[in-house]
Length: 171
Image 1 (cartoon, helix red, strand yellow):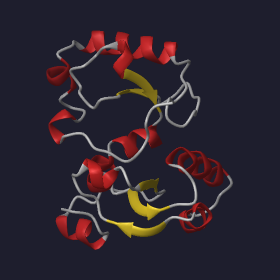
Image 2 (cartoon, one colour):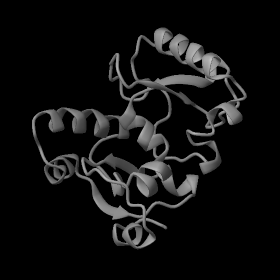
Image 3 (cartoon, rainbow, N blue to C red):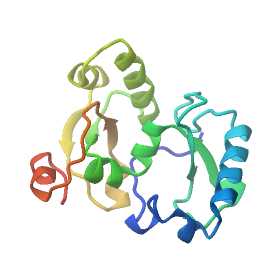
Image 4 (cartoon, one colour):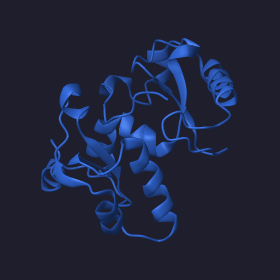
């Protein structure tokens, strides 16, 4: 199992700049992604979620130019948001960070997915997980590696600095 904690990728590496940053053609990226998904049997290498749809690949070391197969892993959408917390917190506004939890990051994802399928609310899930002391996102890997990420069910991009501050995130 790969190390799993909130982290971030520099904005210059986000989707939309893939071909330029990876220095691969779209066809090469699709081929490589299919190869890694097949190798990992469509199983997220962070939380063990298996699915034919929506799985993608992640650069384990965060470097989009390092396309060594040993640096690529299948990742589910929820884990991808934790691994790219800057995007989840500041762009999507659906990742919340906490200093304490009763379970590991892997278990947070697994239990959240299960409880959400049972119709539980974010508040119910957060209480069950023992998530405490919500804190803002900071572009500091040492700070982030001590935190626990929760992917909320809230939808909608923050899009404005005032809203980001209101929800406790850096603008």
